[in-house]
Length: 298
Image: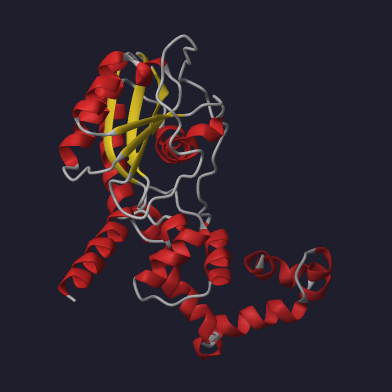
């Protein structure tokens, strides 16, 4: 706008041009004075220019999914003290925005004829320690070569993803493989409860027998609505928003698998999660074990 006035001021004059534009003559003259004398540029402008690259970096490093609140939290974690309103204003100026969740799609098919374990969770998705409660669910991804399916096992305490698998089939092998990865990753499973919805894959004989063999107490939602396994669906919602809808379209299974591998590593080790205090899941678990060791030493 200032450049436009500069270009036409000799022909029409500053005041008549400003009368037709959303800018006051005093604002124009202030900008002109700053162009001539850099000492008249306010300190806030210099700080804004210094902050913008940091905001761009944080946004890029976190797969371009963070909104203003997450960028603000990460900057402060790095020791860059800045107000949230400043982050919001500057992100608008440079055109940065976070991803927004879409509607949930239902994939798990319930089988009312299958026997199922009791509901040990009752929609209370809380845990006082790691390996106390796991939740499991899976979703689908449309690719150029057909649908692929992604299963997750999540530790409720810190929302850590302890097992996952990508497959072109949504048969029992999909959820079994995710469970096996979780069992391999987590050895201390005393008193662990595994909760799922009423999908036939999770009610299969092979799956329930594997849980029993590992000494895990099975739990299955009773009412059959989304609240029965809300935490797992929340994690899947984040996955669909931050990976599938954000980075697609997808060519095939290999592309989805690699992107999921990247996302799980970022999610567990670097993503800030509000429900656990705006820290990454790994940091939350490390803090638990550190306090446990201190207590035992005392």
